[in-house]
Length: 153
Image (tube, rainbow, N blue to C red):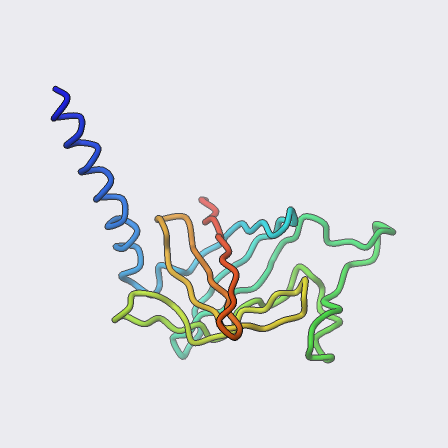
């Protein structure tokens, strides 16, 4: 009996990574809506596919979209591109032109934008599980890992 339990636990442990790996097998699996939580600030992001086969990620909801007055929408004031500083925080494009690499079964080749710091850094992504997208932003070898959780409809 004890050996059976150990065998089942081992089988499940090996099956979990392969399940996530299977979700990385198709580039379009990334398409969908995700909940993010960065430092206690929650937002929702929608990943869509472009005509050229790349993917974009855009915020469509933030937990607190208004300034302290409760009426004025917060803007992307730290954006290094001054022409984008008037964009509402619930409309910011975080990733543009993310490419799927079938060989590595991951996404990359784009920049991810951190609106809290006004930085664009190299981006890579892969699923850790069917509903948990792991994003890694790096600059000069230093990076931050974020997790976006798929919103089920």
